[in-house]
Amino acid sequence: MNRACQNKEFFLLIFGTLLIILGIIFNEWLISKYLCQHGDLGNHDKTVIRIAEIIMIVTGAGIIIFRKKELTINLSVLIITLFILSTGAEIFFVLFPAGRRRIRQFFFLRQCPWLAINST
Image (cartoon, rainbow, N blue to C red):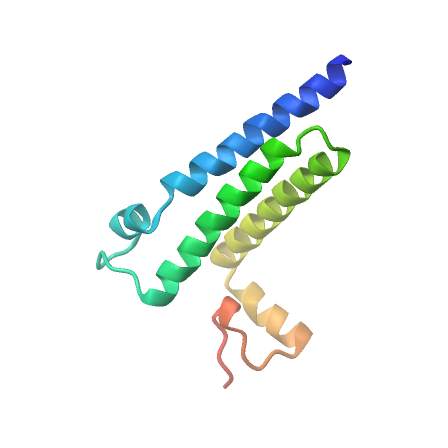
């Protein structure tokens, strides 16, 4: 086995383990305690958090199990890229609220809950 292949497998092992640990640590109780002002999450928020936890744990386990496959590294890079892009978009919309209005005008959106835009 060559060194590049070992490095890929090691990266996938670390990435899969990190996803599993994040899925276990960031549960609804921790999030409600530190990120929620009133200390209680609604049922919808709890469901979303539980689904995200399950997805992270299953994805991490899948990455660890199938780390010898070439497709696994490509999917891992895709996951990381989508996470970085979505985080960048969130930061952009927090720093530049006018960007929300421009997107609404560009796509002719009447209601868009994920951008917190209501029809006027």
